[in-house]
Length: 204
Image (cartoon, rainbow, N blue to C red; front, side, top):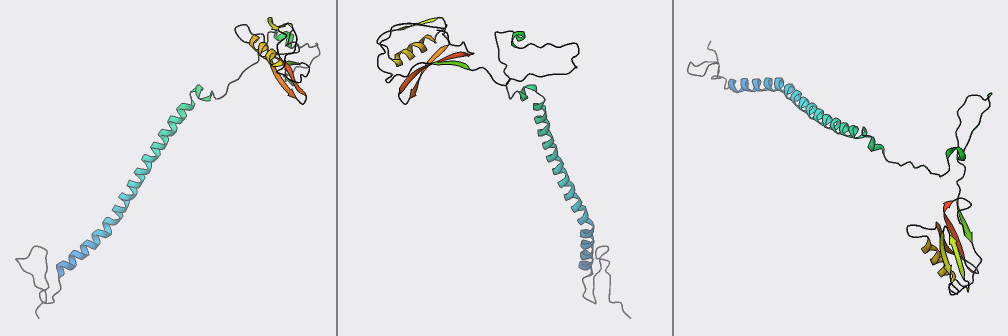
């Protein structure tokens, strides 16, 4: 009985041809090898893709860490926290005269704090109501405000007097007293305000 498969010495090594059956054995073998290669290389390719994704994520993480490090370094600078200013009031009076404390021998050791309930306000002095602040008052004389002299003429109105007092509060040696007009239902009145707090701010 003759075999349906024949081999030819002139054919490439390892190749077979289906002479009797018509089956392309070489094509079939190539397909089987390609399938096996795909089955073997596919997990390797997936692994390479996963490693590449991990590498990209790691570089992004390093970038974020670098930015965080720069921000943290800025916080180490004390000047970064200078967002507020603290101001303390000054007084010509000594601390002992402002507040004094005494204790007896039987006092219990403890810590105490002082709280300012209210602050002294600038003194204000107001005059009588004048019907028209632009009409001459007919007064003459001289006012002394904080060591500055203000001359009052008969032709001065309440508005003129305000301007003169404010002019005396300007310059290198201000009087420390400013003037304003307070409008009322029946006219206006002159109000003097001290630049310093206390009951003796306005001295005339």
